[in-house]
Image (cartoon, rainbow over all chains, first blue to last red; front, top):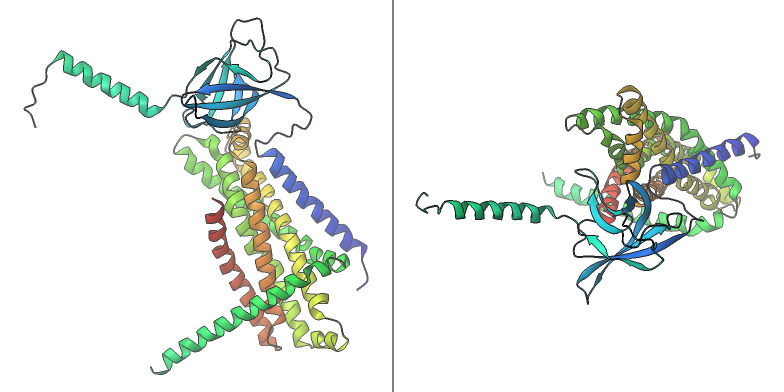
Length: 165
Length: 256
């Protein structure tokens, strides 16, 4: 069995192709961002209810992704969810009275944190807390609110006699 | 009818015996694998035989699997008015199931049979015994490099299969059926996690180990006759297919 150059060549080509395919799968079809050099700073926000928000969800301003949700924890003293946001350092002029709300992308899309700018001259700094927040909208709460208000208004307008079965 | 229970017990005994032999054989192969890596020349040659030579069939089948997935997925999603989810659906189903499983089945058919018949013929023509006479361990010289070549090739083939299949999906979905290109890719990127890619590659490695082991075991322990070699080849494909699908269920249940 004499070592043959063509075998080596085609094996090398095959291995190269395989790793290129893996690289393509990892970088091109996942939402992973290889940000080795990009700097970032952290903000915290406390929510009563984060709904289906997950770590890794985008943080966006006016639809532009400016960061990611780093972690979601629960504060036992405040009884609130504490969400840590990691914002790219190139967006360092966000007014520190901006508000964060948990929104849903489309009808079936995932949830993300939307930031709408306030009017303060001071920008957020690393470790700041977002004061103004809006919780995730829980669909069941909305529906039950609607149903109860319907039932309440009907009761008050016409004292329905409970005779019909 | 008196013979039936006896036959059943005999065939169960035969099955257990074979399973035990297979386990012992696997242990030997795995035990000798690190030492075989010290002689990469032999392994490279086997990577060429079971990997590089399988590339054409893997890519052709991947392209057509992807194109069918594009057609079927588009037809299905159209009924719900969400053709843009084609990329997400195709990518996830390819990464998690279709890619590793179809690659393993093709691998068993293309490379597994080649390994089994080659080893079986070596057994039938007493080449393995001749090596033993020359104080060359056929396990280390012949079996283990073939096993390692398969194990290295399978995950790479899986990745190539998935990438080509995605190209096929894109070809039919975007170029022919007119799904929006931007939405196709962006929805896919939004939904696919790194863990999904890992799941596919882990499955590829596990199926590679299983299919290669079965192929070298069946070939190495083939009856040294023309019929025995043929039977070993058939058994390789059948057992590989069954084991792949069973393992697929177990792995999916573990990783979901």
